[in-house]
Image (cartoon, rainbow, N blue to C red; front, side):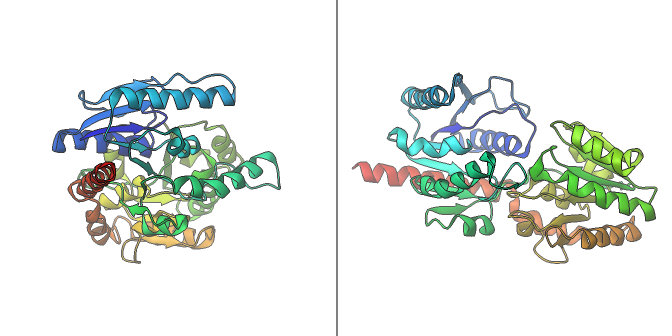
Length: 364
């Protein structure tokens, strides 16, 4: 099958880029797909891509109208050149408009976050909030025009409320190493509003009052200025290490005594899935919509009511008191077995073949 994927960039080290790279490599190597990848950014991919994957790039510049028109023409020209059998879009708000480009090819929109995801605080009725509610108002209508909407969990499907929605989770690519836990708490999150590092640091300030021999390691991209400033205000800089993303994250999981997630919004959080697969005791806020799809029961880890910092701290204290025992480790590892690549990728192949078949039948 010839497949065209559309997304902004592959140069980032985030979960979306990692999942896309893994999936496309898997489709090439295990199912002999002919993969074409269309990006806006020509910066090399952070995660390795199979040499058989063919790259295409858009040049987008100018004011918003010019930018969008170049985006539309670039999509149409690439589709005309590549002639894919299916197009999969994972490209933010502008990607929702592809059904209006008259591409004459079946379209799938792949969503990696909550329908209600926002990247800045809610403050009154400023322009950013007006824009946010406008996008909420129309993106469900736009998404309904795709042949299929793929989301990561049942909770996400309930948010969208579209009959064409299919649930396919992210595959868990990680191969655990033998555990050698230290008194290290781990966060894997970029420095952005939705990842909620600012919600973690005040909790950490309370935690180390009773556990001063623990440290917090935060691996993530983005500007660390605000996080560093807050840690300084709280007087916890000595126990908080801000680190850049690493390609050796599996080793970090193996050495961590607990995994923490205080996100405001998630999709199906790969970092939490990976931590559970590595047997790391995990604590996460029950934010929209991903953590609850992983922490199904109390035997899998601690799912804390969103924003309840006291309950979050209590869970951390329980883990620290049990250290180095890893509560929930075996059951957490077993619970994420359903995300093994061979299981998830088969779902993708079945969906893609079904979309292609239906499109061909409609042309007859």
